[in-house]
Image (cartoon, rainbow, N blue to C red):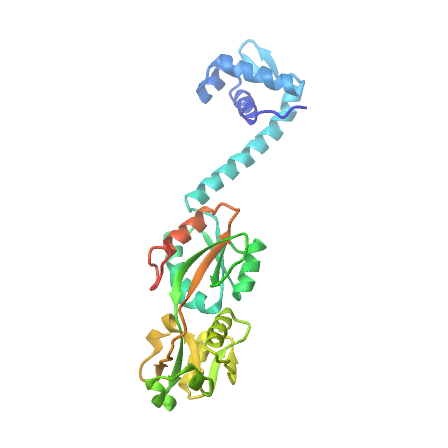
Length: 301
């Protein structure tokens, strides 16, 4: 059987509901001959007579009654789907699923998602934490729509847009106050260091930068939280490596930056989406919000 034009079913339902071709034509804003032609075409394709013609209109035949209930349910489902898509496009519904590391989640996403939720309360939000490699896998597997990644990230099949430049710096507590004057990479390597775990993207980037300076760092303490690094440094347990942009408001009487000469070159944090899938309404709105300087240092355009 040839596939039937969906519009023919809509006309069929209109005729069945109105009880006449003329009334259906008026409700559909088309001519009566167009309605009659559509019903003949549908009956011809299905090989069944769908209506019994009466003097004052039409009524469903036995075959028409069978078709009516199925067609009505199918069109209702399609209409509901179209309505939901419309609501999603208007950001009255839908989902926004984001993958990001703990530090990005706390210092970037938390204020950003607060604003997003206020502007688009109908969109359901979810966040999955992980390293760059883990969030990329979540993105490829369809578990998230957007992934925050540390650059460089040269994964194929992704559209990657740098959104923020960050600087890796070293911070110490009052016990190490003489270091306020600064250190060289060689001097730094001999100090008690506190750094993120070796598998984290930030740690890998710092290690690579220091190796290019001819120094290999061997921290005595490795932690999984950016903010925990600061707590350890504050108690005098060593010099920690943190992201300057997420730390500046914590520096003061108890913590200070240890200048490193030469400094570690800046790097970028980026947002990634799948290159071959058009972004949904919530994703487009999130990316737009991210590009409106929603947080200090935002560079996404």
